[in-house]
Image (cartoon, rainbow, N blue to C red; front, side, top):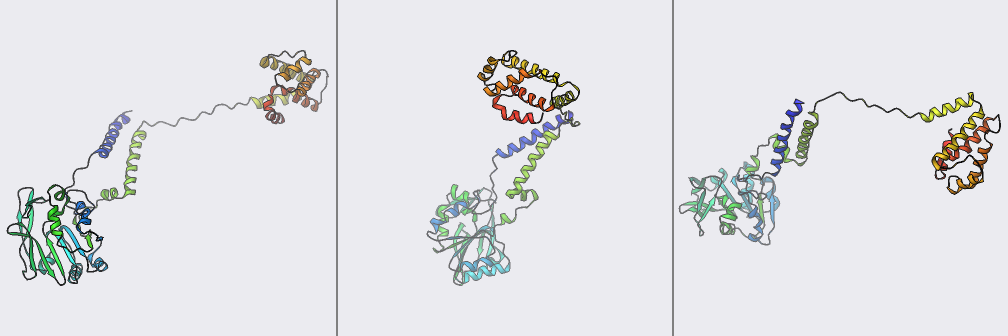
Length: 395
């Protein structure tokens, strides 16, 4: 009893936590993912949905693999859009990107911090600023104040002026947007990716700024890069996170929790020995009567058996139908037929058999069986006549 009382609070706590987890509103995710799938503040769902108006009539391809493998499929007559906090590429992938731009591709890359390959190729030197407020100022016609995930921001302090030109400023002397020519193509390097995030597009009015900057790209197919997302690569794949990320494993996990709750509910009760199943005594009255009948056939005078059957049959008529059958006359035949107890022929045979029963002193076995079969018809209603005949075969 004590064990059960101790289990109930634990069970109630588990149920409460499961219900609270189910109905609890998830907190706002302020992590910068820059993924087109995310509607969080620093996702890019709003930007991705507006691409049809920014590049009308042009297809949008979503890239989920290394640029070394994918750029050759799209050809150089396209635009490439990469946005994240930083870009991590190996030498082969960087070479593939630069070769693609040199053949005529145009790459718009918006990063918080430029990669070493981009800085070295265009002799770019970057600086860093720190903002004590939650906003970063962009020196544009609309004088934007953007919200970012970090107060630290980078700017371009110097570059190769022969190939690179400034295209936008975060402050009057802080270049954050440059255009770099490379072969037949162009690099657009932007150092404030938060301008394209959902929060700033929807709540800080950066739509005109986005239209102006992305409007520099020519009207042709766009490759949206979803492969280089640091937020996805940095997710810690703990065993529990992996289980909850897979639909089948997540369902199995909750089933396991439900089984644990059921075990605590039912298995925590006080255990006791199994109660034996008491089988009720079998009714052997029929077999007993058959045994008595066979015994009487062997030990008793047949005349006494016939008289007993006759007496019991008349008592049955009187008890169940209220018919006094001692007269054994035509009136009894009509009464049995009228009440549909027996049909007319059966009633006549039954009355005659009852009248002749006990008249002789000696009966053979065949005569006893025949008389018993006729007399016992009174116990079987006509609606169950067929079933009664089957029962008589076993007597």
